[in-house]
Length: 98
Image 1 (cartoon, helix red, strand yellow):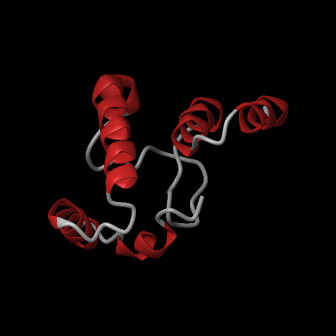
Image 2: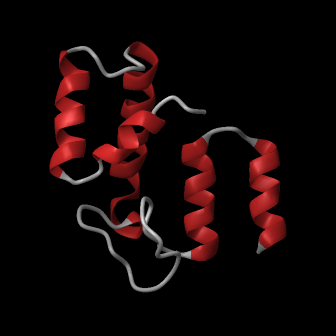
């Protein structure tokens, strides 16, 4: 499994693709927490059911970050609000970190 993970990291710098491959290899985890494996903890979508929707969300997220990397525009502020409501606003300083 570790060789497969390293192969993906060597092939791309696309964090979304790396995360998708990691999910396939290791299973679910807690993105901003300490849990790395175990029972699914999805609140909104399950990859095996909502794969196309997740892909669309990924594309939209990349577009938004390209157009408004600091999330200062009207839509960016709405996204900041959503991150806060879902208790994920601690991720805001990491946006654009690479």
